[in-house]
Amino acid sequence: MYRREIIYIGLYKNDDRVGGAGFLKTESGERESRLYLKTQNIPPGVSGKFPVRIYNGKDWKELSSVTVQDGGGCWEEKLPEVIEGAVVQIRLSGGYILEGKSRTAPETVKDRQEAVKEAPETAEKEPKAAEKGPEAVVVTEELPRRPLLAAVAVQSGQPDFSLKEDKWEQLRATFEQIHPYGDERCYVKLEPKDFVILQEKYQHLVNNSFLLHGFYNYRYVILGKEQDCYYLGVPGVYYEREKMVAQMFGFEAFECPGGEVKTGEFGYYLRRVEL
Image 1 (tube, rainbow, N blue to C red):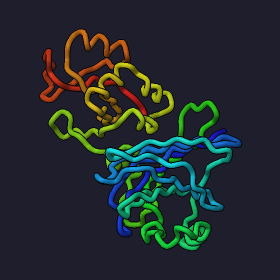
Image 2: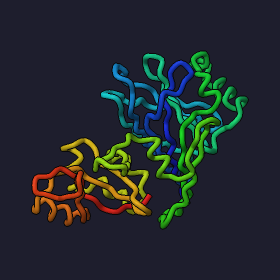
Image 3: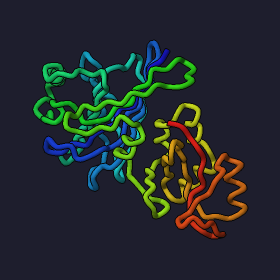
Image 4: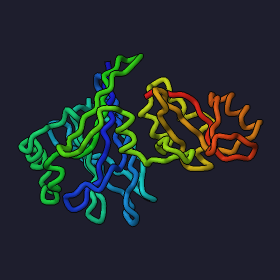
């Protein structure tokens, strides 16, 4: 058995939550853990290297630094311990703080205050919003070593936040929304590194050559729900040769604004996926 958890990160300023700012993915085996952090929506002017702090139920540990530039950054680290019930915190410049909380992390103010005492050099700057519990969203999966189908639970640490029990509705609240066809259908913008939200059998798409080609041209891909199906879309221009290549890489459909597919028309090459 191993444990995989996705902790959504909140951005705070002056005790207030500004919005979502990425996620921390933890994968823990019997003796070690792998951490992957993606930050996004960081305010302009905030850049540099900032230490990642983890509270794992016992004490605060300062790990290596994440580099933030152009509104975001990525960070990875492997630890010789099992990560469970974690709180992650990154103190940025300009008074901004990134913070996220596992659903099994300490819930009470007392626990939080005790955690702060473990790191006295930074206790004075602890934000009130963090004391109330980070307003991040957590998706937790308990999986066998070779997972088949994960049961997903969603929980919020924000008392007055109307969190959707439906995972798709939560993704809409977390990622930037887009109406790619000019109608009421709503999709969200993703990057390949966001594919941790997909079921395990679809995460190989992070290496799909056709998808990466479209992403590097337009800097995003889309994910949407229509009826009971989820569709991953790669932006591109419709040509017969491009359609043939798309089909070779698993993208079997094409749709564009207005619905009428013409040569040279911009739209999205689509394939079904599962969350």
